[in-house]
Length: 209
Image (cartoon, rainbow, N blue to C red; front, side, top):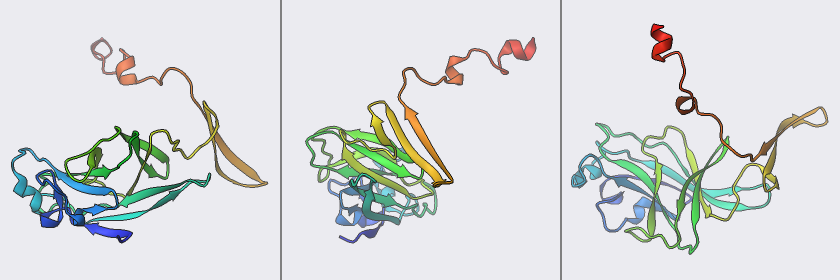
């Protein structure tokens, strides 16, 4: 299978929740892009029409390489062509795995990795073993990279110094200078002003005296 394909996202060559099987033209490797329900589940014909769904998703299949020698299979999904009329259905990533252990779906960008979903063991979807993920891609404006990894595998841009400490080198020009970072796991959580504070400029007492 080519390492770079254009998945149409609509018509007979696209995958939708209205179909019992997904065409190969909607799949690259173990990733499928599936158009899901609009306001009314029975309006499946909308999913076939490029006026109402995003189309022409360019997807690349490659690898993400770690400094520790680990090589992860990954997919890079580019921004699609938006619907020419209005959006009726939306497009989500579905992944296929035969693993008997839990798997985790990660996204990657310049800031690092972000956990998106955990797929339960032996999870199977309605078509060829594909399982729905929460990653919606019909509205993305920049490319996104995703990789599916065993839940037990550590995925991070930081090196692990201990079970509670990670570290990384940010920038520098040795021996002139070097900038590094340490990340510590601590108890508790950061404050959330919206829920943790009962006082603020918009409070009635502060507004009206």
